[in-house]
Image (cartoon, rainbow, N blue to C red; front, side, top):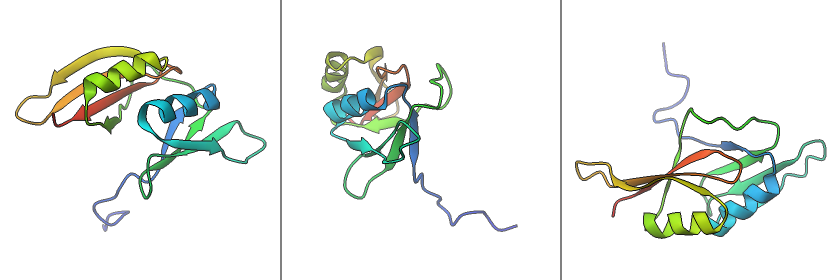
Length: 125
């Protein structure tokens, strides 16, 4: 049977649970430089975001519940320590400081955004 998508099948959209989409938009804009705006769907409190020109797009969804565990996505950054500092200043919570992945595969850090979503950071340095 042929695959459902042409390999490799890229992630094309990301939805982040956000009880207050405006607050989430401000947090991710402040820390990571993402742009966000209301979707225009008047029946939903839903904001759309873009991580950069030609990069991943997604939405902050006020209808989806925040979950304490599950899939964690990682945001690539240049400096995990500085990013964790900025996250704390912007209202996020640090779950784990910078630590080595091992084997030369870089470093990670984990945080919770103001809504309570667990998100990872990754850097080579």
